[in-house]
Image (tube, rainbow, N blue to C red; front, side):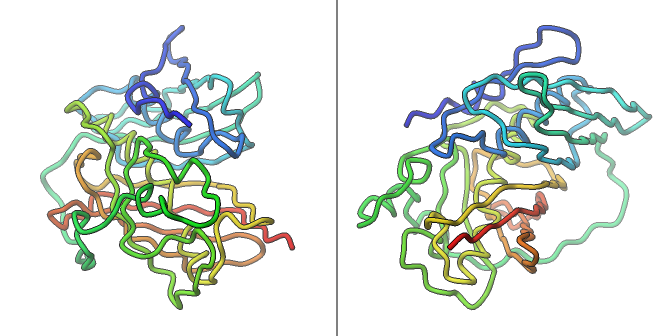
Length: 283
């Protein structure tokens, strides 16, 4: 399976003011990857905001499954442009039906204010780890193309991934993954925010499978994103290694909550992510 370049996916057509069209990518699940909707929504909103106001948060809701073979139309509503902040509402549609909505906020950087962060967790450096597609190359069971071949985002798991079987229960829900884009990106902060949004949806709910010893791709396992939140704390480069420190603190009523802190190689906390997913285990 061939995957388009990230820059091609983030380059949106603009047929009318505040209306954008995004291309999609093929997937074995026959449903559009949620990270692409997140990334293209950031791109669309960012195209309507002054360049000196980087994105600082996104609150998104996945309304219904999207078709990976059809273009996505994004409509941006300019809610507010204040002295230092801008707010946008982005609605994504296919065939006239709403599939995704998000509130995206932007803020001019300010030098004042308190500063602190919790320390970056210790982790094996990415240079000592295999890319995921190489790690799975000798698997004795079928692996979906989504994981088994090189992709726009390179993943290097510090811990064992929740595939293929057998998956041993880890006893804890913490899960560390290094990630970066497979190719360099231009020096545009908006593109790097888009790339992080895309990557943030790839592994965030993996800890629940590791905790319970469940193969992510086992027959009867169905997972769908319900909502997704990202806070951008500092400027970042998505084409340099970022450590994704993830955990799933609670699962109940067929839903699971994932949380993630993103650190750069200098140990700076650059972003925080949260997502709730619908998890069905059909026997």
